[in-house]
Structure formats: C-alpha cells, structure tokens
Length: 459
Image 1 (cartoon, rainbow, N blue to C red):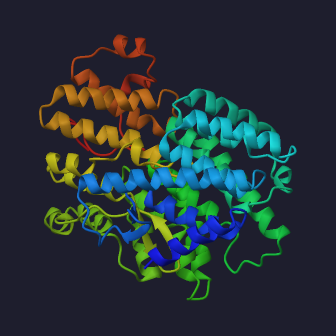
Image 2: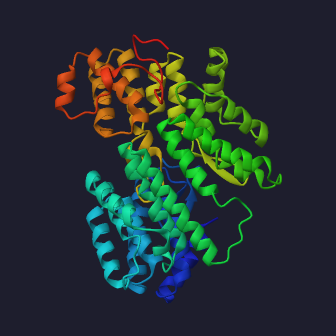
Image 3: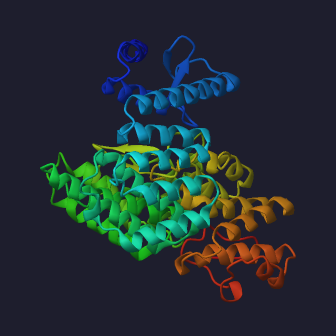
C-alpha cells in the first residue's frame, strides 16, 4: 500500500525540511487525493487508501478530499519556505491554491516568485492569466495571454528549469481560449507549448523514439474533439497520427495512434458522424473501443437496438482510457448522453451529464473539457425541452450563448441551435441581441458540431 511510503516521506521532511525529494512524492500523492474525483483517499492517521476499495460514503469522501486539500496546502507552503526560489515548490503551491479556489492567494504567490526569480520567469503571463481565469476574470486573463502570445517565443524559455511544469503552465492557458471558443488562439498556445517542450528535450540531449509532434497531436485532437469542430482539423490530426503509426514498429504503434485517438472519436461524435477514422483506429490498434464509442457506431448504422444494448449499464468512469503505452481522451459522459438523447431517453441523458461542470475541471493543467461545456449545456437544454421543462431548457440555452459570446465561426452551429431553442421558447431576436449574444445569420442550418436534432427539427 501507499501508506508506509507516505508516512516515510513525511518523517523525512520532519527530520530535514530542506530535503527536496520527499516533497515531490508527498505533492503527487496529495494532488491525487485532493481531486474532485480522487483515485486515492487521505484518511486520519496519515493513511492512504484506494478510493475504489475504501468504504466511503458521500460525507466521508468529502471529508477525505477536504483533508487532503488542507494538507497539500500546508506541505506546499512548507516547501516554498524551505526552498523559496525553486520552481517545483512554486508550482506546487499554485496548484494547491487553485484546488482550494483561493485565487487571490495564487496571484500573491505569482508576484512573490516573480520577485525571487531574478527575471527568469517567462511563464509569468501564463500563470497569471490562468489564475485570473480560475477566479472568473476570464476576459482579463484572455487579454493578458493574447499580449504574451504576440511577443513570446520558445527561445525565451531556454533558461527556465522545471521543464515539465513550465510546459504544463503554457498548455494550461489554452483552457481560457477553449472556454471562449477561440480556436485559433488555443491552437497557438498549444503550438508554443510544443515548441518549448521540444526545445527542452533538445537542450537536455533527449533522444525521442516517438515523433516529436506526439503531444501536440494529442492536445489538438482533444481541443477539436471537445468543440466537435472543425472536421478538417480533426481529420488532419488523425491522419498525421495514423500515418506515423502505420510506419512505426509494433511496440511503439499504440502510443502513436493514441495521440490521434481523441481526434478520431471527435470525428465520430461531431455532426455528420464520420466513422472512417474510428474504424481505422480499431483496425490499426486492435484494441477494443470505449463502449460509448461502440454505441455511437451502432447509431451510425441505424442499429438502435445494438446501441441501447451497448450503452445499458455503462457506469461513470475516469475521463482517460488506456491505449497501449499511451492515453487518449474520451469524453465518456457527454458521449453517453449523446447516445441516450438519440435513443429518446432524455432523462437518461440528463443523468449522464450530472456533475459535468467547472467544479470538476482543472484550471492548472491542459483540460479541454472547458471547451465542451457549451455542447453539454446544449444537450441538457434539448433534453429538458423534450421533457417539457421550459425554464430549465432556457437556462441551459442561455448558458451556451453566454459562454461563447465571441466564438469562432466553426462553432456557430452550436450557437444557432441554442438561439433557435430560445426562439421556440418564446424569446425574441431583439431580446437575445440586447443580452450581447453572438447570433449567427438567421440562426439557420445545422452542421459543424451540433449534438443532435432539436425538438421540431429533422436531420
């Protein structure tokens, strides 16, 4: 078990608070135990238990999470006191503040480290923008980030230590643009993170046996899959990963194919339901697909009976699915809800989407679920409207248009569907315009990344 190791690390820090290595291990364990859906639980007496095995009810789970968050903050603060100029300690404290929702404390820590870094803090605007985003200052964070993107290059990160954390800080800021529906700026953030990562690898003499673009393919695939668009971009990511996978040795092929896995599933889940990429993924990789993906494939064949059989009994599960040596993201609950909605189980679709909200999402690491939220709101709205709950439907339609007030044109089909929904519920174009919503031309047409036919609409 992990309990003896955790206690040993704690004893080592009690004996020598300046010893860095135990902080890394304690930080990793407490990060896991303090998550919204923790794989580990921190129990009284410095015990660590597997969440799947510990007999914890709702109250006991909440207490364990709160305990882990308090302890993580205390340990991260101790690390910063012991090693105030260490980037690893700085990032640990920022992560702990973010998990606790103390964003003003995170901004204070950013300014402290800025003063102690000797000017070697190129990721400063990314850390600050992410903290503002988490605090709800979304436009301010986006504006600061835009200025940084216009001036910073990968070469300016050459002197920074803690390479993995620096790249993570850059990539996490893509969440801001995903939330806003700004495809191009999100892509630019991902490109910079990839350039900085490759520069660090080159400087350290790392010889990569996998394509250098692997992580960029993964992040771009997740970005476009969350949006469900643009289809050509999803297809380019998948084709790049598939081409590299075909020519790779069998032992490396799963990790390479996994970098395009999210894009392949994204093509299937988007409007139009392109099945070719997922079929090729299954053929090249040889591993089973997630059951939600199999259910979507059944729907694409118009086999509702098979889809219903596959989706029945699918339980909530972690967001990541293993694929050989690598991982690719499958947005399980939104996909399950999409299948259930198409099958006419509107109550089931709403149950599948319970808890899919910002409280589950990570502001301090790359998490493209920030970009899927409007499609989740749209699917909830459609399901509520089908069930006759007009007030709940209107709230969800408004949430779509509120979040994506300045969305990329590729995302306009989602906005159009939300706008049409509000018009069906009795609101007027003048009212929606007065609220500052981005209304597409006549709010007509479907395609791009819509989630399924609206009430009264046909494919």
